Length: 337
View 1 (cartoon, rainbow, N blue to C red):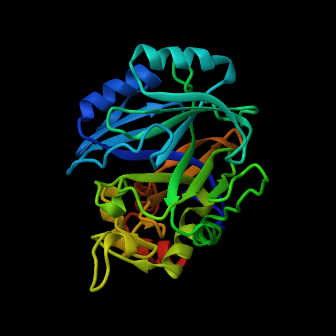
View 2: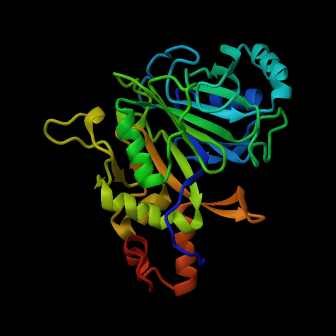
């Protein structure tokens, strides 16, 4: 695997994982409401395919915080849909007894379109998002009921300026400015057409890994060329937390921990950490957990891409060199073998 290394922006939300009190129920719910299909098992849950993206749920190890209500709780994830299909999506939500709000026309989060908010049986928050102009790749591999890839993710922030600085520094993302965006909202457009959105809060709602849930996280797709350079910026700029991403020292609590990197819990993440002594998970200042996914463009465009988890890079190095000697130096320092 050969690429020209350069830091670069996030293109898409490749996947997310949240928690469920009943994973089989969650899986069946998504099959009915999203047209999701089985993608693979997880140690404590399941992964499903929705459009060109992936979603997952891990079994909740403690009771989930109560729902704040449809369209009010965070985090909240969106899926692209076509405006021509909105009535069909409403009828499907009604047929399955799903609590929903909308559809509403809005320009309040950086784009013009129609939003239809709803929640799953665990109180996790979602939206169908039908922008006036669908970006290229939005409906790639859409499900049989017309649900496309992940359109946006909305998180909590106690300091929007600090959040904006974090994503500008480590993900090359700049806020969109618009008179339609209300105070207390930060919109970060991704290069492919999706969005990260932050809402200013005074207290965190508790549905994040940083607040004690089991590996709830969001994976952000960058070009293959940017995978290691972007991580090097993170490793140089934030603390490494190692194997326990929520370990607290004297005077600390989970919600006051700084932005940091930590070992990802997957088999590949553990292998990577053993090789480089750096984690490929990272946390923002508000307990939200992320990691990068590499993407190889299809047909010369990142509108669609082949996703590469960190294990792909490890395996490619071993095939090329016959062993893993030098992989750590390459990953952390960029040094050639």
